[in-house]
Image (cartoon, rainbow, N blue to C red; front, side):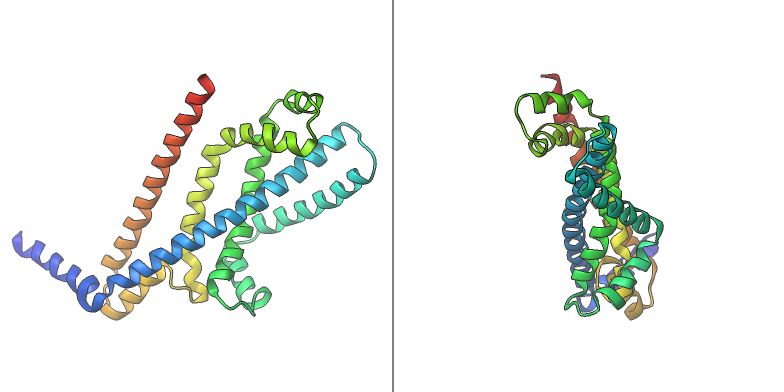
Length: 243
């Protein structure tokens, strides 16, 4: 039993500590978290804008509003529909390769390519999440805001969206977790993220088990920490609603 444990310890030291190979994992983790954070910000902005355009267009159509605003929103809604169809209907790996080899071929950094790809991809899913949240809010909330003299934009940002975010928080958390795990394919464009770091260690040591288990454990810990944080935020929001 002791020999078996000692063998595992020796192998762990060989894989990670010898020649400071653990730094490959550490550097990969930093890249993974950076890409995830920046892509999340971009995805939230895109998703919120697309959701507002689509819900505003649907509301104007339902109210039979005419004029330039209706035409403009109709055009923007058509663009948003195409965007959602294309992004959600194609694999993220294909999108990443298209960005790297075709669209952003002149980009100076692979991180820029990864952030743009995952941000645009995530934005399509975030848009539908926000859209469902906005549609779940009673239309009387909008009417009440407008009757108080607030503009449509102010009512949407100050009244509707805060309530919608509370409703869609669980789905939004799932999308963030998915985004974090999707960044594991960044190695396809040469970006040294977490999974690529494990592959580099495997190439140097011919040991696959320990590097891959370490990466899986790191992803698991991050997801568990993030889930716990979001659960605490949800509880706080529920408590504020009861007051």
